[in-house]
Amino acid sequence: MRKDVRILLVGEPKVGKTSLIMSLVSEEFPDEVPLRAEEITIPADVTPERVPTHIVDYSEAEQSDEQLYQEISKANVICIVYSVNNKKSIEKVTSHWIPLINDRTDKDSRVPLILVGNKSDLVEHSSMETILPIMNQYQDIETCVECSAKNLKNISELFYYAQKAVLHPTGPLYCPEEKELKPSCIKALTRIFKVSDLDNDGILNDNELNFFQRTCFNTPLAPQALEDVKNVVRRNMTDGVKDNGLTLKGFLFLHTLFIQRGRHETTWTVLRRFGYDDDLELTQEYLFPMIKIPPDCTTELNHNAYLFLQSVFDKHDKDRDCALSPDEVKDLFKVFPYMPWGPDVNNTVCTNDQGWITYQGYLSQWTLTTYLDVQRSLEYLGYLGYSIIYEQESQAAAMTVTRNKRIDLQKKQTQRSVFRCNVLGARGSGKSGFLQAFLGRNLQRQRQIREDHKSFYAISTTYVYGQEKYLLLHEVMPDFDFLSEADLACDVVCLVYDVNNPRSFEYCAKVYKQYFIDSKTPCVVIAAKSDLHEVRQHYSLSPHEFCRKHKLHPPQPFTCNSTDAPSKDIYTRLTTMAMYPSSQPSRSLTTLCRLTHSLLARCSYTWFWLPLFLFLLHVLTLC
Image (cartoon, rainbow, N blue to C red; front, top):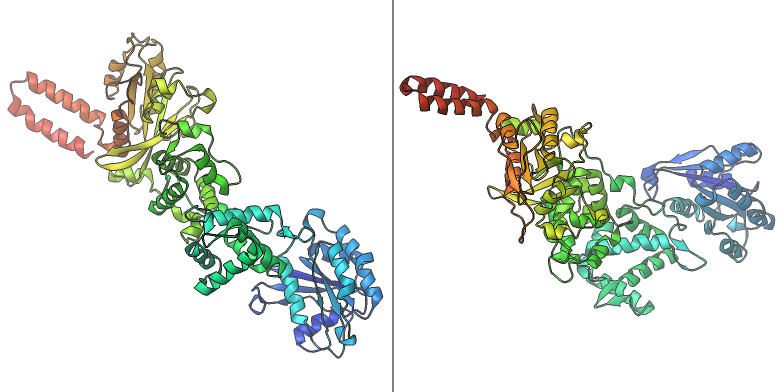
């Protein structure tokens, strides 16, 4: 909503423009009227809409045409004043003033007009018979007010309607010629209806109507008032009420009725509460609330956000099979201006045998979006109405910003729930298969995935010491010469090579030595396609020797060429290593342990060496 309102009064000389302003300010008719009143500002606390209002007078005698044009361009609403006892001043409304204003304003953003018939105290008849055809001819005219500056008739009402024309304009909502809501208004109100329909049964029951009423107007409706509303709809249309609840058609009819009866503010209050601006677009402030994310911190959904998303899933899972069919997904996203999930999502998260996204897969996709692009997640939650349903200031309340990763390493514990594993390897080494296996898909199911539906991410849950955690796998494109910060920023690294390809391991070795040898990020070497014959790798060291030399775990054999779903043990291990990177034995400690074991095995003076080795072991453990 606008922060202030600027009202310009124009019209022929001697119609009473200045008198109207002075009567409003002094609450009495002035004895002497100047050629032009100075601009006045009415403070917010004395206006009905609590918005500062600037009132500007125009005088042909004191101002040039250029000054008039400047004032027209600055005005939010223009009052064209005529005298009800002066026929020529009425004719000038259409022959001069409306064409002049239209020429000086953009066609797509026309300023609202109000026709003001002053000096009604001088006649016994109304000018409305003459004015109504003009109002029907020009869509920009909001209303007409007959008033009298002399006896103060309708003076306050005039400026209230002017303010209302700016803050609650008819133009974006309603087409007077067709006597129906405009498509953009119908679209916005339909989204509001669907968000408010908490059980997704296509009607607003009494509880939902009361929640809607409290949300928009801070007060519930009494039971009799609810019945009265529904009775009004019943009397005017047959399908507006169903099973004693309000249908979408009935909901739209009520807003049409509000507008036709001049209660535009009711519809605008609803629209603005649900995030819409004057152009019936969701505001940037609503969709993208401020959220600060320091370096080395990540973003996750909190408990309330997961509860909300669970309720959204439940109300769209019509057949209660714990999965969303394509039609159910489409219905869920009807409140969005576009379809946010493409076919790649089905290859990013867990699906059922029909390829439909399961409940776990649905939550996983939300978790992934929040981790990778928190602004997108905020936007999506905004479309779903999170802040409205959960009565929060914004959907930023759904987010948890984790603490700095360095603090986790120092304290040797973490409160995070989502861990990222970057998967690197030469082309054809089996990275994609490794990702899809995490989602329970064997090689046979993977071969059914279309190339253009492929995903470079896979996310699901694992359990570490009884705690449910999300592991996010990211397949990094094999470009050894350039790995970005995003390719390197993760909690654990997988280096994948093909045991059946003699040139496959060399890429893993070079990437490790170039980027991870001095890193604190845990690394795991995956010997993929282990069901095939293992060949000698064309590298100076075998994979086992390389891992031994660099104090890594031995290569982990892996295959997804199985009848059943692939084992998840390796993914649990990766999550554990990501959660507890400092628990991995240090290279110095590992070396000392091996040396101790070797010397003690050979030396007959065990009693002499043992205290020294135990002391060194204690020191290294503290380090």
